[in-house]
Length: 94
Image (cartoon, rainbow, N blue to C red; front, side, top):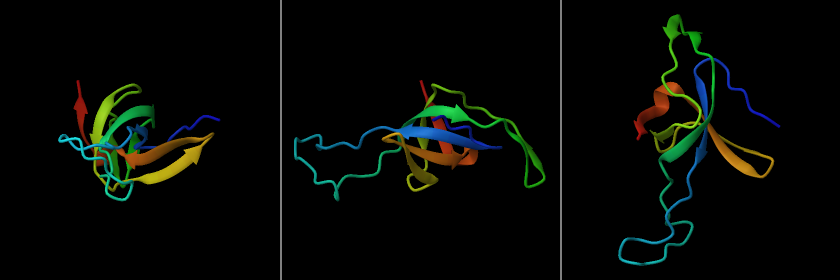
C-alpha cells in the first residue's frame, strides 16, 4: 500500500528514539523523548491552502526536523508514519 498526501501534507518516517543517554543510562520507553528527526517518504503537490498558495520545499528522501508533537501517526503494513503539514517541518538536515 502506498501513501499519497494531499495539498501541503508530508509523510514522515520517524527515526527510532534513543534508548540510552550519553552517559550510558538505559531509558524505559516511557522516559524516551519523542524523536524529532525523520525521513520524508512522500510529499503532497502543494496548491491553494486556506486561500494562500503553498509551494513545497521538501522532497522525498530529505532528512528533516519536525515539531515534537505535530501531525497524525498512522501504521501501514507494520511501518509507523507521521503525516504533518509542511509548516510543521522546522528544518532540513544535510
